[in-house]
Length: 529
Image (tube, rainbow, N blue to C red):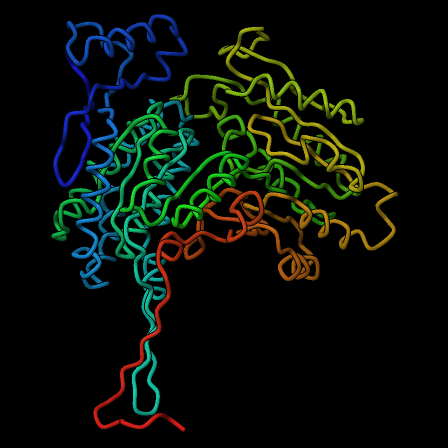
């Protein structure tokens, strides 16, 4: 039997066979032959790792599944390693960043191929790796280091502000973007924590590759103790319960739905664990009347990356009434050009949609509230033709007139995890105050808070947004809504996105705590005046 990638569990510095294997389908093969490909997957899993030649067509890898005993051993290994790893000097730990950047660059094509095989359209996969590269760039790692250790001279003493690691961090990445989100755990390692990573059972291969092929070899080069990183895989709920109950766990990084995540965050606190939450997003993109419309349209089209099943793409737009007409005309024309396709096609943005039923419910709700469907709205097959059983949805744009009642519309109020963009156009009823004030209030009124963005050439408008928009962890102006930049974090937000302690997420800061240190010079005895 030939399997391209095969990863056992990794616990305490050793590969360990799992209780059985989960086999990873090639998304393109599955789209072309869903029944046959899935049948081969199930046959392999029932065979317990032994199969005849020829039954691996459409299978790209396998990852070992963990028992509760395996998870317990991983937690103990991380707990045992934490004192030694945290004692490494900061410069050595931070060396992980540039070395990871070099390793990512060297194996870019291989990781890209794995993400595409997991069903990420090529352009989406390229964007995900770009975020990983930015998070390990020289500028960003240098900023991380500056925040972890600061020193000051004072009369008779040296003062320091040090970020000390919390201890054992458990990371539960989402299945829709598991590898790129799991990469945030490397910043927690840089802060001196040890790590237990759960590779999602439904999409484990990218996570296993990142940690086994990139992270672990670098940690070995740096001399990190066994147990600094541990990789397990299995069902989510039982593993989360085990993490909560374990005395060895300090922090849990959880990605997922807001309702589930906020409740889980409360459970973490009840069990004495620090929750680091990355939950749903409902980002707003505002287009002002002097905006570069072509640039704004390009940013709005980012809504349809992965068919909108990415938390940090724009989900709602506010279009100034002076430019709403031409903006929507250009936007809908571009949307009609988007087509489904196999994930390795260079121009494909759309991926199969998981929440078909909810899409039709939300679209019907928008219509009931007077929303106008300007394009899209149909279920389609791989070829783009309407299909009652198709795995895709057309990119859909709905116009909602009026800011005042827009939040009554589910497509505006809730996260839409499918290719639907609600464009809100203010009307005369929104003119009781200055329109700019009304729009800023609308942006801040969002229950979610991941990213917001603005398109405007007016410096006064830009300044007002920068000063007065308090919602979200990141604000982008006149550039890609989803693009990555140096120094600024890639994740994190307020409200239903990050919980009560939500903000721009720097994992090295979120998984550490601040300690002040005062070291008096020899001869200083009395308290200061």
